[in-house]
Image (cartoon, rainbow over all chains, first blue to last red; front, side, top):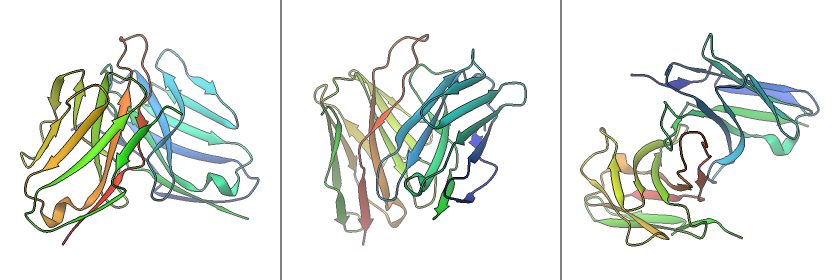
Length: 112
Length: 116
């Protein structure tokens, strides 16, 4: 079936470096994408979203890039901090107004 | 602060003993969801309510049921928990607005269910 997946299950970076987390999706009907951060023992927390009519969106220290041609999504975190250590999930809506399907997640570890 | 609240934080039940997990929201969102998340896996949607309309995912076992008595509360009932049902159960809400106004889901902190 159609699904959202991540290329890298783990990513380890040094504090202050930039991080890039990648995601591949396969449902061509998806027109809305979200990145969530999940810390251990907590629920997912919204980071940033992007609609399919955009290819880039920036937030505070985060940027999401969308390449619809190759069905690829990435999350860039600038000046990564220890507090950024968590599992990051991409999610897509499959064309739905209000349903999200999550990818497998990437564990980001930030070393001081 | 407006939020999604799940109780209890941890729940232990016995194999085959019915259990109910609770979720409440102060966001006044019209859509409420239940996701199951097993260790090191992505959250998996079980079902959702759009207002009072219940929407079950095709692969959600019959063992899982849900109730939404009003806008603020939603319950997950597991009729006969098996060992494979041990997981984190996440409740989420969204405003469920129209196609041009996609919005994110707001998650609670989850209930970690153990089955002995």
